[in-house]
Amino acid sequence: MTHISEYAVQAIALSAKYSKATPETALTYACEAIAEQEIGVRDLKSTDIDAWVEAISHREDIDVPNIVVMRKSPSILATAHSDIHTICIRGAHTNQVTVLHEIAHLSIGIPAHGVLFRDELVRLTRAHISVEFASFLYSLYQSTGLEMSPWPASAHQR
Image (cartoon, rainbow, N blue to C red; front, side, top):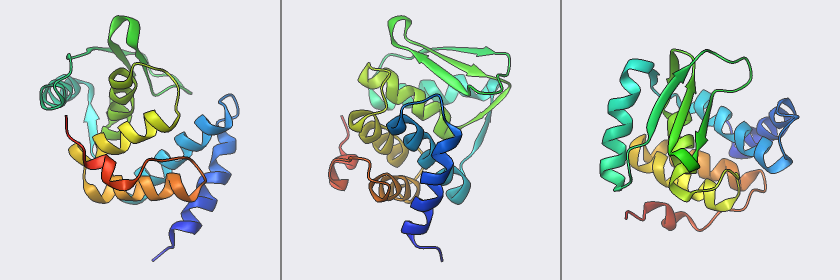
């Protein structure tokens, strides 16, 4: 079994791939990619996204965002637009983490990838994917030096 510090080294190296992002954002993206690779998450067809997002929105007591599926982009998987409460998915397939990533942006109302965003994403993955995935992602964020709130905070349900 690989130790979390080895995954952290991989994430730090992978963050260079996101050269147009700030270092914090690049590292956040890299940690998510490593977690997706190591803990596997469900792929979603664009036809299944609406129902899953609606179920999450009801459980989280948030307004259901508009979902727009657009042509595939080589560099952008998805985007969230808080001003129009919309998530744009690029391509016919995505995965649970990508969708939750965008819901986290809408939930906190800011486009940044700081501690507030990461806390919300861990909380959402804990509630809608698995505690195992959330724990791994949380540990990876911390091991790479990204700031996180204490782990028990991720269990908070509204």
